[in-house]
Image 1: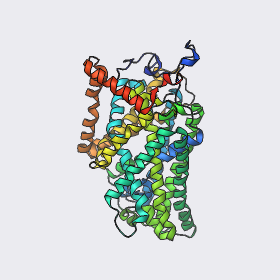
Image 2: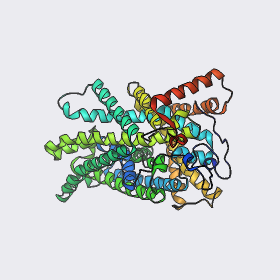
Image 3: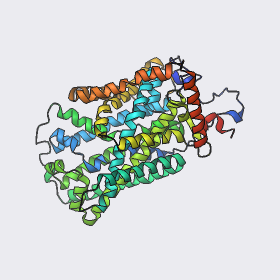
Image 4: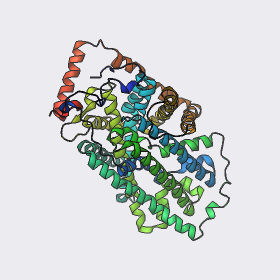
Length: 503
């Protein structure tokens, strides 16, 4: 049953800092020790935090088709500049989130920060769209890339059957869900392993590329900024592609409550991760151009495979496997982080109560993890996922921009707020402007798709008033909701956090 929020307005102390469900016991609490809440355990170390960020940022895109930026810039040199600038701007966004994560030490990422600053309605709309469409569709898309590339070595001479791709994709999704349901430690350990696989794959491309440069293979860099002139719309679209490639730096903030020493770990993990990803992305693109011309890159559907076939011989067969493992890492990191978003939203009364419960022995947010499984399967076997993501891509940047703008608001509204990590004000200002610029670009370049996405997002407003505000629901509806919740508790062996200590 979806519950009405305990607090419906922002107090001087903030929406999340009052007597709301999900709070930690205060220092002056007189509750007996046995009745103190048992939260999800702090198992995210610095290394695991880095693996979550890198593991979710680096997916299939850098290996398969980085041509979107080249297509819209018109030259090799300008495309490399865009890759670098987008990395720096993404670092600005990540640093802004580092301040938010160390000031508001609650999991949930965008949702939590929007709730704290702007109140429950926009926060609910954010989680509504994320749960119903964005996350299932995004998971299905990256999972399809996993399915295709894990089968690639077995279908070298022929086309891979679509049914086979979807079946192996379904298996991969199920494995990720089971892994995240069973153990936080194991999902984190596997994420570290998969992150090393991603970095190994990038090194397999960078090292031969550097060797090519040493041999003098620089013909594709001559007159690097000459070529087809970028159009007025081309540069903003190239910039949009670049920012999308770096998306994922915010996932550690989804699990803040599970991070060891978050005041130090979150900023360190973010800075180290973004430095590695930015350098890796730029050098990978440089490596491509040592062997492949701009024209050939634009014709390739899988640049890393084309590159490896030319330079690595039989070793090129390993590249699709590394791409598949990279996709699996993005799947695992995304499910791990976003399940905490649903968990926190349920704890605050914005999603069904069952999603805020944890397993009595494994201490994982089991319902919040597995709720994604049926939704992702529906997306997997349904229509055009890419169009669906295009419809709602503007919503992601709109809410991220709002969250970072909230940092600026909090600086003036609550100047005495404890901020262990503080960034210069121009950093969040520039980044929030960038996000709003991308939203405006979406409206200008593709008003039809953006308009549909805007309408889908707005469905969260009536849903908020129907499920959250309206408290005179029929008795039969309440009884049915309570019965479903109790049944699921028994089947899944989950209880609210405050009951775990007693069992």
